[in-house]
Amino acid sequence: MEDNRLRNQVQFILEVDNLKNVIRRSYLIDAHRKENSAEHSWHVALMVLVFAEYADQPLNSARVIKLLLVHDIVETDAGDTYCYDSNATHNKSEREQKAAQRLFGLLPPDQASRLQELWIEFEARITPESKFARALDCLMPLLHNYYTKGKSWKEHGITADQVIDHTKVIGDISRPLWDFARSTIDDAVAKGYLGKHRALSNPAP
Amino acid sequence: MEDNRLRNQVQFILEVDNLKNVIRRSYLIDAHRKENSAEHSWHVALMVLVFAEYADQPLNSARVIKLLLVHDIVETDAGDTYCYDSNATHNKSEREQKAAQRLFGLLPPDQASRLQELWIEFEARITPESKFARALDCLMPLLHNYYTKGKSWKEHGITADQVIDHTKVIGDISRPLWDFARSTIDDAVAKGYLGKHRALSNPAP
Image (cartoon, rainbow over all chains, first blue to last red; front, top):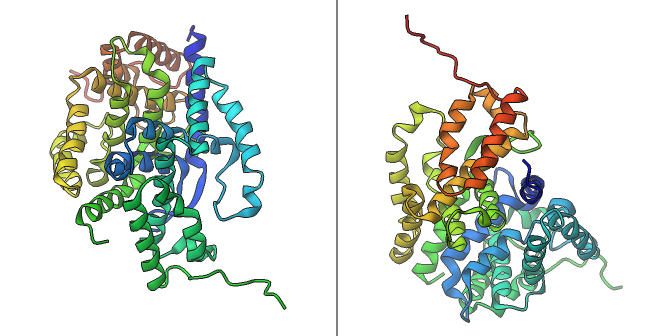
């Protein structure tokens, strides 16, 4: 390989292979193992092809897909941060910034900027595309939890008020998907997959 | 969920979750396990963002990504067919057609057609987008094999002439990527990752 540009691009592709080793909290629908961030990224990008019609405003679905293809790449270095783990989320931004610098920095500068911009757009959640990408990224674990009878929710003692608080961003970009998410959460509570309110571990005297 | 359309779309997304259980022959770059078709689909779709510039003719890279997001979905039912297994490839088409009918058929008819068309386009390899998608789909396992010192090639007794025969389609759409693939294959032979010619199991008398 004589070409430095191509060599650097290949190096990037090889490094992010490790996203296949980053394990999330959600279980596969058949519940036999937890999913990894690479296969999750495929699943949620595919979801765009099927659910784009539910966005409340016009959006560029190809860009939503691109955002989702890169949205978890920083986890290659920084690991997956569980959305309900407040200890881990406090330094998430710093860890992920550092990871983004290193990983996207493997690419030729023009592509490093372009891919990093996709990640920054996803994180900022200002454009309709990034809001919709985030909505699908929240909806997917809801499906995985519901269809595994709340397996991961139960393991981590997650309750409906936490799930609602985390997934309500779906409503910022898609009324129909938020209605669906809400009814799925209600149904999960009714079926006992999900507790209603967080138990007070340190009740006031 | 009152809405049949949404219910059918969710059912499709749940069913294809099983692509995460379809194991390919390639090992991860760290060689500790084989990869599955869902995480491979993410990896190769991401590759478009980095390698699209090497296409020999103008192409719609967003469409290449869409082709790659759906290209292995039929394996959810039909399993992965190893490209060097001539016993398995003979009825591959029939198995995959049946899988496509069932899986895409879970979707509302308009989306079923649209996604099935993506798969048919990928398989037909006539459009520049499908040729490029196929090129990346061939290049990726070459990288996985090379960087695991030919682990999967060795397990299956694969030789350079077979790899060249299988990957030469890269040259139909990208001269630079084919040059790179060729030099990677030569280097793999030089390093002993890959035998040069197939041993004749039934030599002529």
